[in-house]
Image (cartoon, rainbow, N blue to C red; front, side):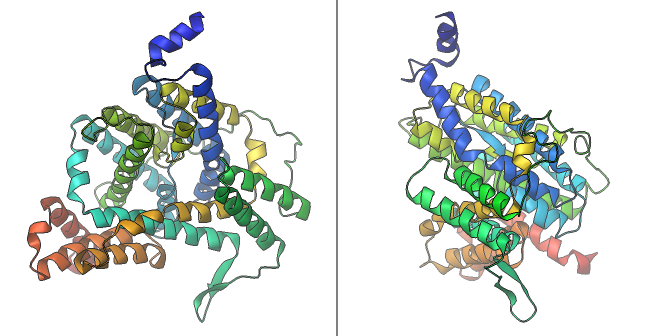
Length: 440
């Protein structure tokens, strides 16, 4: 009774028409739908040379810190962890594409988190958010979806490099391809049937198949439990000698840009589903939620993981009745338990995580229906944003080309009044980045 009264005082459960059991089950549901990140994120970041076990621990601790803030400070049912798309940008653009060490990328994430905190404290983020054209906001999500899907297809071996055509269909009869296909179609079928945790179940099923086929193996020690892997190889590894370069600004801004729109869009969508918007359509708790997100990112970069952001999978917990920060705390509890299950997570084959990337790519495609393709000053920049991300293999290039082309299209068609001052500044910075080899 005393325990329940504590929860009532802290989270105002009755006022939100919920109870402890409902909140706990909502947190479990959210965990099931987003726990794939504990497999995917360490696998992605390890491609940069980072220690996979260290990233696993860093991701969990940073996520828990962010969810504690979201639960106790913001009292909102949102879960946070390393954001998809942002971790792909970290790995494939900054490190493997631009050739920078992963410590450079962590530094950019750290700076982005500090800037995000300042924007959250001084309410500047709304001005930036509203200054970016609606079509480009939607195009960024779609482009990241295609980029992530391409990574998934190539990582699984379903798509391979080809000297004549650049890309081609891989050999679908290998054991690895069979695991990838089973993972993909099991996730697809479960998602179509509305099963919560479809990606997680697909990963589990395909891992069992991979064990049977010899694609993956049980841990050498034979135990699925262990102490958390050490953070020593990834924590507090920031570098500062490139901090004032255009590349650092470009990388930092891309992290910030995607983080702001990802977070604000997710918060708005989930808050709408939870009926948390006021009569004017505003979200009263958004500032606390954004600050929790930003602080989580700063801690994540220091511990050794990519940008922490609010997960759209929080909607699954809200659908189960989660309405308060107790849902977020319940999700954090299951994350903490996972901290001692690294050997179990390490069994999962890359083909299973690749299939999850393909499905996440699908989920991020839906905003394409909201782009006005009849207005070419909007649709052409949007299309270039979408196309450049997978074709240039870079989220940053998609954003850069999209912004520059948007300003150019509006200027040459006599519609300069539709361009915000922020867009002029950003497009000029990105243009200078391309022209810097000539200018300097």
